[in-house]
Length: 239
Image 1: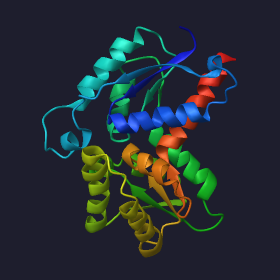
Image 2: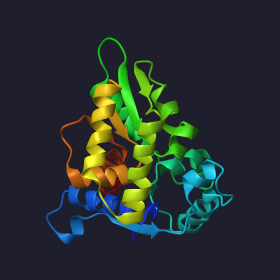
Image 3: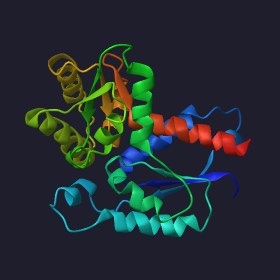
Image 4: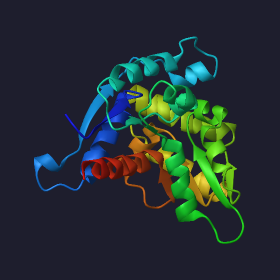
């Protein structure tokens, strides 16, 4: 197979399935042959990234992802797609494992924030909704602060617990897309924390966004931006 990419998924599986759905739905097609060529690695047993980052587990998830990169680099894909936001904490280590480029999801999302929501004067308040692991490692904060006009706004402890519950308790554990809690979180970030836009920095949140089709509150969905860039690169490589 030529002109293909490899998706490093399974973190978690439902979120990976959501990414594939968005990817296929947005690909411009008129026949079966117009869809994109890709390999999907649904490595569901990769240890939890947040547990490791927070020191609650000694199982280093980067080892499993590095093994995947080593294995699938042999097939020489055009690029890799890493569908877990928190795993981007290990991005530099992962990229060192291969000469094949890995798309950087947080960087793509922040680029869209700056392009679409940055104010002409003053700072744009950007609310970050993500796992505790992603927040602690500053994967998004580091990208956002590269732009002097973007101000990072983090949830307080109580609201972060709501975000964690939505990600782990509702989506990961019970396959429940808690629309009420999702809108409650967005409302609080928008109204009580005065955010101009919220970044959905977890693919479980992207899954809920896809389910609810939220248009009421301004968000940049990192998974959505990753899908757009994946399609753009894949089509460029095909031409």
